[in-house]
Amino acid sequence: GLAVSPSYAGADEYVFSPIPLVQGSLGGVEISPRGAGLTLDFIADGAGPVSFDLGVAGRLRSDRARQIKDPVVRSLGELDRAIEIGPSAGITLARLLNPFDGLSLGADVLWDINGAHGGMVVSPSVSYFTPLSRATIASLSVGAEWADADFHDYYFRVTAQQSATTGGVLPAFAPAGGGFTSVGVTLLLAHDLSGDLTDGGWGVFGFSGYSRLVGAAKASPFTSAVGTPNQFIGALGLGYTF
Image (cartoon, rainbow, N blue to C red; front, side):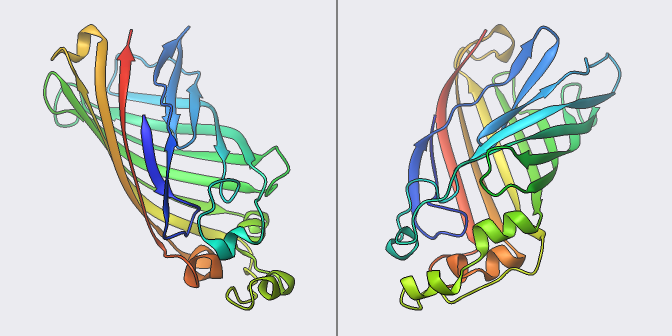
């Protein structure tokens, strides 16, 4: 698919980028999409109404590593991409309002192994999944992100030298340790083009999301001086199920 998203976390300018999504099961391992990544669940689901997830998650964080549209932020150069990997766990309660829906609660705990921010990120979420018809499904998710001091220093700090480089447009700023960076909500819709979700084949999907930066992510001059804490994302795509 093709997504439109902020140029960086906190930006008020938007860019387009391709977005690959993979979801399914291979050899008993469940594969689920994450923002710029995926999770692998190694616990097989039983026939009961309660199932557990335990596995590994990974994502590529390209914040301020490409497509920086703001000229002031771009003058400071690009950051390195972070490769974040760590455990993922959760629980799903099925058949709450109909025979096919489910409510999931979970969290990913990820560490950067690529030497970019070098810190830890925790992403808790609550999601509700349900079919709307035999051809259409929907998933609504509410989530947040917490990050440690290393993460905050890498993405939100503005040094005195950087402030001088921007002519004072970005004033010097030092985050006070770690904390929550954002809270948000996303909605995913998928529609099977044959009219039957159970027979595989081609389908279309779309999702939209809104997040609000909080704490140091909101107070950082990258957001407060040249951006906005209100962040939107949207995507449309074509998928194939086999």
